[in-house]
Amino acid sequence: MQIADLIKANRERKFFAHYNENPKAYDESLMAKGLEVFQKRLNSNYELPGSPDAEFYGEEVSPYLQTGLGIHYPKLAVDKVIAQAEEGFDAWRKIDAQKRFDILFDSLNRVSERFFEMAYATMHTTGQSFLMSFQASGPHACDRALEVMVSAMDQLGYYPSEVDWVKNMGKFDLVLHKNYKSIPKGVGLIIGCSTFPTWNTVPGLYADLITGNSAIVKPHPKAVYPIAIFVEELQKAFIANGLSPNIVQLASDGSNNPITKTLAEHPSVKLIDYTGGNAFGDYVESLGKTCFTEKAGINSVIIDSCANFNAVAQNIAFSVSLYSGQMCTAPQNIYISENGVTTPEGLISYDDALNGISQAVRALMENPKAAAPTLGAIQNDATISRVEDTIKQHQAQAIQMDIVVKNAEFENARIKGPSIISTTAADTATYMKECFGPLIFVVKTKSFEESLSIVKNSAATHGAITCLAYTTDKQRMDKIEDEMNSVFTPVSFNFTGAAFVNQHAAFSDLHVSGGNPSGNATFTNADFINKRYIWIGNRYML
Image 1 (cartoon, helix red, strand yellow):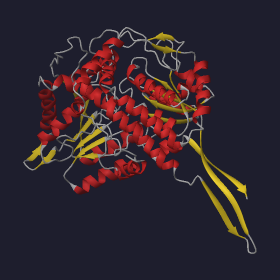
Image 2 (tube, rainbow, N blue to C red):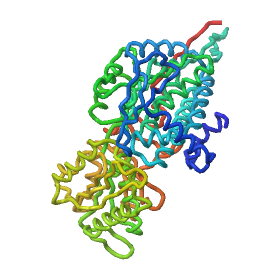
Image 3 (cartoon, rainbow, N blue to C red):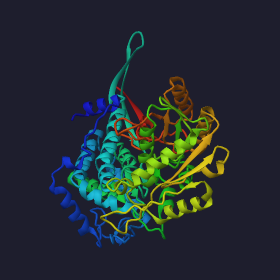
Image 4 (cartoon, helix red, strand yellow):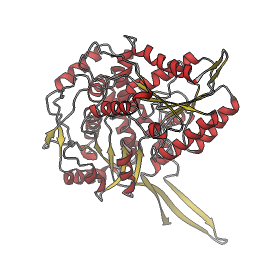
């Protein structure tokens, strides 16, 4: 496709995907080859073109096998990483935008040839299911990166590169020749997370690179392999074009000897992209640098009325169970009025609605074909401990599922199905905080109005990336949209069937609004691009 076609697709925001998300669309031999490459990678050094003389370190543990992968990654001193990034920047900033696009697009196509290896790498570092790992870390991540690149080409083309400026002065014309240049800011640092190591990382990475900045990728030490594939293919693309591989670098570290703050505080680092918890995100924002953050929030569901409550319950059950609630878009708090839920068949009481949701979750967990692939595995033990501690604290309010889900392929997989805690609106200490993982709070309110008021205040105070609402009342729908949008939270209405609030599509959905405490940036709007460079205009008298 031509750049103009890609820009058109990006502006229209209709369905568009350059990379096919269906594993069956690829040569059937590639899955076996991907597994073979993954297995050969275990217990070895992951060598990168840009780090020939590095020491190696790794600590990844498979959530499915609960054994170490034994993969070790280049570990460079911070000063060396910075020096190489500055050298890479000096060369890369001089490359014109179209050439940068071509090189970066080449890197994505190189990654696409490793989608199946990427799937196994993601599975055994994050705990995502094979299908989610394939889609999210492969085609979806590449489409997000491409979206960023296309957005940048649109923005970088806003002004003409040069123009003759003529002003009539009466007896003569004043003629000046002017040019307009986008000047990149310098070295960018991209800080990854352990649950979505590529999908959340490549937007910032490719946004830095397409605008002419160099990039240092600092992955979570428990999830390095997937993003290392991107770094490797980027470095190969740079080398193929006669450029330094150190335009992008992998800066791996260990949990016991982290280097993230040292990198973030280094004066040469001008840009920071961060995905993760609020405390460190607040620290990144406090540094006063150009930063783009995605932090935590409390995602809510309002159930007021619906056409088919069983379909609603099934949709919610899947959304809260998908990847065991370890998604930044996963619902956590479900608000139902004590007046019940209005349906064509009559009113469903709060207790019956609560029971309907719990039964839908139970049915999913008891489905031998769907349960394990939906849940995946828990990325680390801390998540399970945190969930179990919360359940113990609220034992009287907890709805016990007593369902043990087993993964037929991985008997040691770290699995925990969703738990539900029923509470009241007044008990804010119980539900008004992020509880990452497979835990749901169903909150009884006095009315629709109270439900909306709490959800709005929650988003404004604690942040929210998504909001799911069910109502057949047009006035209430408009009110929810207006109130939630006023605190910069998008709303998904009446999702059933194959539409799930967790899923955000490249080239269409904006991910994180940047307007509430869940983060200050958006995948992908103009600000996500334009803050990475400065427009400069020069004038020449002819």
